[in-house]
Length: 299
Image (cartoon, rainbow, N blue to C red):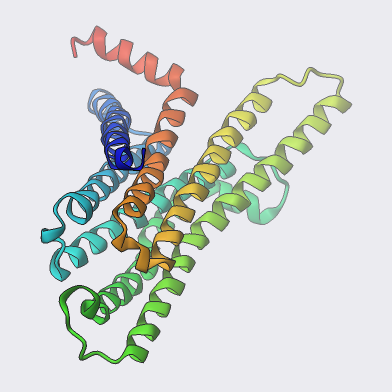
């Protein structure tokens, strides 16, 4: 049974890779063609398209990492490992922050609060999202810098270089792990806050319509529920993805075990695959309308 695990993991990884590229490619393609036809794209579609493209990149990087670390270990030199890890850091960074931006967009567009600060954010949602996307490289640059330094300090584990001091190597690796945890925890916290605020907004809305003796399935309630389901699914999948990454980083010694690497790859690929299918399902009416629209134009 243990001998079959590598084959089972390989099939799972390739299946997730193909389905993930299909789902994210579908989102990006439909939105792009709709933009070409209409010459305009909403803020939500812009975020969804950017998120889909970043997830395609993330899936390819995860596949390349699996290929070099498991199937072609001879290619897994310091240079290749560093390039793959830096490419992963970039794609993972934008993937998480685009998903976080989507959570913020749902919050400011759907939730209803009388606070002056919230009303200010609601009126300037597009500018705020732009500032968030353009400002997040503040976290990315030090992350990549520490990552490269950490890889150089660990060369003795892979290429026999024992000239680096063990203490210095431990300091750099601890710095990398701490920064890695921080840069992933911040967007997760923002998405979690957005979800909690959506829940509070829904609770206030339901309380208001009960006082007005109206049914609970009005349009605003449905929109709240749909947004909450999307954000909650992202949070749950992000937790599994985040835990897989944390385990792989904080237990770097186990990365020499190919089964452990493949298990982390399977869990990591599950996030960009599943959440994209959930986005398609939650917006199925929009995508169905656009597909029918495109067919009428002969696409």
